[in-house]
Length: 270
Ligand SMILES: [Zn+2]
Image (cartoon, rainbow, N blue to C red):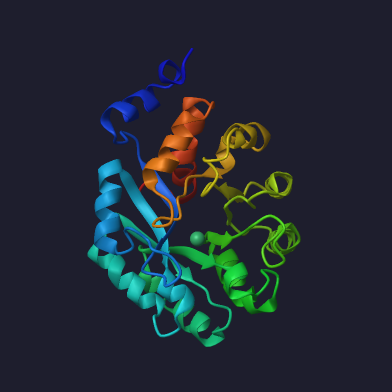
């Protein structure tokens, strides 16, 4: 049986170019960067693109909030308010500015429903995930059961397996999204999910281009532990949706990845 016959979900998507199921993109960014040209980096362009394909919510952390201390998270919240149906945000955590972390997290509740979790970027900030400079933010998230999306990469000395394992074991209830699924260290990623109490997820940015990987992770940890994400505007929604729909997994696996896992965590109305 071909993939088309097997998955009506995919067949309809190829035909219409638009999803007739919800898509939650759990890993996005926004804003220009001086090291790379990003085709659609501003909110209006990104939102128009997501509407074309059928993304229901994008959860993003603004590049400038991550890298530029004069651009605070409140600015991302203001952008969300201009696109309240589709945009949600991670509060960007920059470990080099502890005062900003405390001030911004004190505002977290007032930024709901747009603020849904926290974003950490240890490799880029050159502060290992298990460094005490993240403790306040991690404790804040663990106590409130807020998801934390952390950049990860296999073999990294800031956000590789040892640092993730330490943090995940230290905060056993923490809802932890492993961005890029510890790219390259698939065994480590599988171990982290298996050893958790069901609160650790692998986020798929950059994976659907790797042949056979979605099939492997679906078999090893289950599609209930996988989350759709694109790193928009770095990668394109069509590439990642196409990658998931082309994988040799069941239609229910696809639904879990696109939306069902997130709805189990955050509900349908968030
Ligand atoms: Zn990212």
